[in-house]
Image 1 (tube, rainbow, N blue to C red):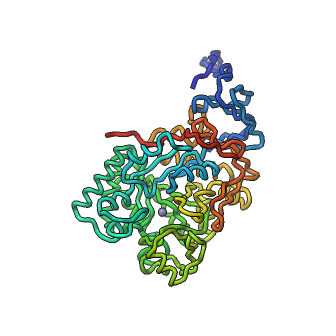
Image 2: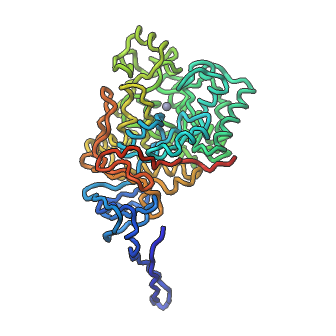
Image 3: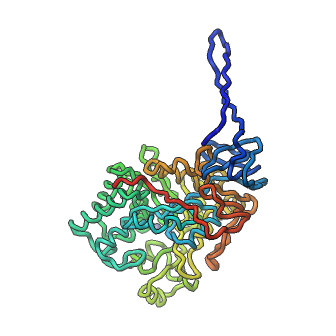
Length: 490
Ligand SMILES: [Zn+2]
């Protein structure tokens, strides 16, 4: 960031006391050297509260000027009538392949992170994406994949054998903690956990993983042990477990997709998170804007008792590949086969409750694309919040919505990964990850029936100063995405 600044010093006398006033005046003298100027847009920055027409100057992948005066650049984007916001940061996207990044870019996402499931091999995960990524990418070290590796579970995405159903031996527990430790030393952004998928993991195993996270200042992103309403295995009881683990170990806690865990009880779960925060704990949460969840049919979520715990039956489950609703027979058949299902279990009121609450972040929980049918959230989450819930339903205002998808996720990670201090903001010196969209037309197009649809109304998306979406179209075969990673300590 280089700026020509004139220092004007004058002396002012007030009530007989002399003091100096320093006035900083920006000359804009070097603006000719800007790479890109985003001109005349409504610049919205949730950190400073700026919401005004400005010109934004980008150079070397950074925002170097935000001005009311015209700026000169090698390239000028006309943003009149459009909102200019920090690029969206998705804390929860399982699909980390080029096709997912294309859908996410079209949804305004500039940084896509897999923090719930995570990986067992952090170094290899980053190496595979280096120089090949449209948008920024990052990962947690995951308790699930580490447990699967240690216990030789044959599951491909989620555990299906010992890692789900068997308590770990003392030797295995040591290996699990060592695997988490190794991942954090390799620069994992956080620790991921899905206790519902590893139900045989004891409370003590969970607390030990929180201890390892605490030693590295890493937040633990948890899919809770239980969801739903049936005592004693309720979403509320599961929140109690992880808040206690966070309080006793000092690890920051992030509860993922709180609506699909709480269902009708979502307001109570949010209240638990708020209460913990009010008492000084570093606890946060997120939600996606849909009334259905999605997971693998072979996972422990569908172990006996699932109907009662979720308050649903076979017909509320949709086989993702074909879109058919299940029966007792097809449920058994597909459970043996394995694959993704969509579960209609979240009340619309719970979705609204989460979006209205200013502390609840927006994150997609998008899934890998394996066929023509997948949950639409990976393709449409952010445009759906801005189009459906902000504009059409007026559930929340635009700045609050942007804050939930930019500043709050950056702040969640910036203590452990200081690079996030320069993300999620439109500020001089911040990374030029910028999403330019039309607040009057932005909308998700992906549906449960036809999920592989790009969102509409996103005009430009810049990743480290490079346009990956231009006039609404994807620019292919460019890879400006960089690793979003914590410092490596090994
Ligand atoms: Zn989950």
